[in-house]
Each structure stands twice: as structure tokens, then as C-alpha cells.
Length: 474
Image (cartoon, rainbow, N blue to C red; front, side, top):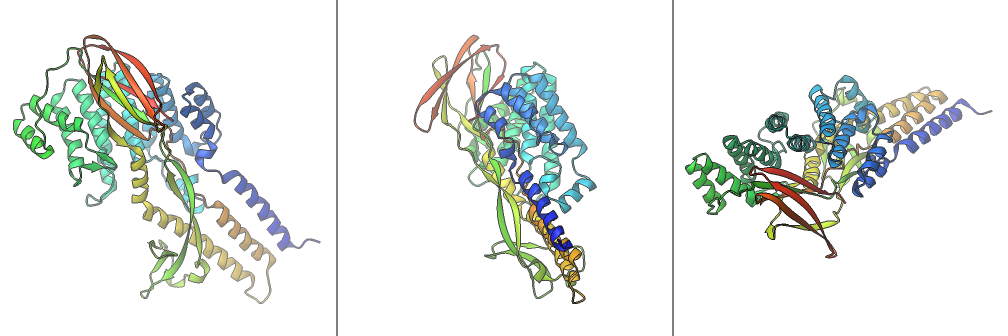
């Protein structure tokens, strides 16, 4: 006859196996057909793949689902539908995706089971696509509202961190876009302010670089040009000196200008890595987690009696943590020509760098939460196991329960590998002067092997500032 301890162990083993089989895949692996269709440019199939995926349909992934739906609708040219999804995503963010129950899930299970709250740079990118959608729908007033919301987003980001922290709060590219939108609305005063704010972000760095992007020459020229248009000659002179250039705006083009964005590649994916830590107590009795080499030291966030913590019960911890992996874009360069005149693209946003650096910035805080959760589970397992043998005899039920806690602790630990992966890896841009009437614009793309292909678009020069975003998502 099977004794109770053996029966319990078998039950827990079966439950653990089911848990492992259902939860070991990363987010990218679970939604792979969708991203494969996006990369192939088959947006109709991509939408079907997205709507048919059970993981992204879960309530905890609603924000991610809405952002992906908004993105795929934008790629399909369904701008009104795209903004319907992005507006709903905005509402979710405004309402908040945390709360006591969500926090409890993070403590008892893992962060991958919590509501997806979005990366900080992803929230700025919502404004980018919403603004373009409104522009393409000829809804200029709504686009300007979106431009103003970029400032509000920057303020919300800044409120999360101490001003002394070197954290990602403002987004230089979003402020550049804000200036372009104001300029398209003939508001050169606010355009100058936005361009200036974007430039000052770059100028805070000794090499004028912000998250992998060097200050674009176009931005330097936009700051000086709009300063002169406003009659701010002193500011214009100061920026010329700061940038080391002497800029004299040319005669406005009869057909206006086209701001051309090239969105290349796909955002990095998140995978899971395992890290090993030990719990140590220093001479003052304080508890810390340390990795094998001692290079990472994280305080133990424990609200109970630290003096009664048995460090031997948690002397070795295995934690799962997310890691970004970049996806190499198929195309390495692009050349833009308009009626035989070449325009030069400049990188404006490096989403790869933003992803890697922002994850690194919050690593210690997130590791602290993960380690504390794993340690508490270990302590519970140790306590039950000790109680099972407290009277000199082995209590089969308690011993079985301790194995169950051990198995649950092992298999419930999973890194949060979710992110908005249909975003481009890089965004470059150029300002193209247009002639009145028809303009034939050619985009010549080259890959790493030197093979090239050319795409052509036609733009009508109307005398106003226009926008066009071109995506190569593979």
C-alpha cells in the first residue's frame, strides 16, 4: 500500500510537471507566429495570429495586447482603428495597473503573472504612433493634444525618480516629434521650446549622446532656425556657438517639407537567465544577498524579525531574471532621394539601447523583490520540514508538504519576458524639401551583404510640413 508521504510527493510531482510544461516558454516563444508574420510584412495574418493567441488574450496582458493591436492597425493603414486601441491603452495606464491583488500575485507567484504595466519608453512610443495617426487623418488639433501629452508623460516619468538619479525620464526623440508637430501647426514658439528641450537632453552628456543616439544635425538646425523665426537672436547665437556651426536657414521650399521616419528592425526580445545568490549576515546583523563573485549585493527586504532568520535555510537561491537579446535588422542602411536630390538619414531613437539601459537601471530593485520572494518561500519550506521531524519521528504529511513547497518555489519562479516587440529597433529621420505638386521619393535599402532594393513613394507638395513613416521590420 502506498504510504501518505509517497502519495503526496507523487501528487506534487504531477502538479509541478503540468506547471512546468505550461509555463516554461518565454513570451516571445508563445507569441512567435504573430511576430513572424509582422516581420514578413503579412499584417493581415499577423492580426489573425494576435487575436488567436491565448496568452496575449489573458487579462494581465491587456495593455500589451492593445499596444500590439494599435501597432498592427497602424501598419495596415487603419489609423482611426489604431488610435482606438492606443486610446484604450492610454486609459488603462491612466487608471493604473497595480493594486493590492496584483502586488500579492507578485509576492506569491512571480512578476510574469502580474499585470503588464509597460516599459517607460513604450509609453512614449504610444504618443508617437497616436500623433502620426492623427496627422494622417488630418486631425491636427488632436495631434497637438498628443504633442502636449508628451510633456505630461515626461513629468510623470520624472516624478518616479529623484532628480539626482541618472534615470530615463525625458525622451529626446519624443520632444523632437513634439517640436515637429507644433511646427506643422505654425506654432514656432512652442516648436522652439520643444527643440531646445530635446537639445538640452543631449547637451547634458559630454559627448552629446543620449541612450545610444548622438544629437542629430537636423535637431541642431531646427533649434537655431526656430529661434531665429521667433526673433530670439541671442539664443540662436548661443546655440550656434554650442553646436560649433554657423547655420543660415535657406529659402522655404515651395512644396513645403516632408519629415521622413525610417523604422528599421524589431525591438529586442526578452529571454530568461538563471542567477545564483547566497544570503549572508554582516557583523551588524543585517542581511544581504550576494552572487557567487560578490559583484552584486542586494539588501534583504524582509519585514519580519531579521534576527530569527536562519540563513542556512536560504544559503543558495536560484532566481530567474529577464535579459534582453537584440534582433539584428536585415537592412543596415538606407538612402533617400527626391527628384534626384539625396537626403541623409540620421538616427533619432535607439530602442535597443533604451531597452538594455532601462532594464539595467532598475535591476537591483527588481532583483531585491525576486530574491526576497524566493527567500521567504525557502524559509517556509525549511520551517515545515523542521516541524515534520520535531518530535523525533517523521510526520509524512508535513514532510510531503515541505516537498510541495519546494517544488512550488522552484517551478513558480519565472522571469517576466514580456515587452512590446513589434516596435522598431531604430528610428532614423530626415527632412526632405518638396517641390510643388508631385514628388517621387526613392528609398534604397541595403543589407549586410551589400544587396540593395529600392522602394518608391509619391508625395504631393502642398507648401506645408508633412510626415511619412516607413517600416522595414525584419
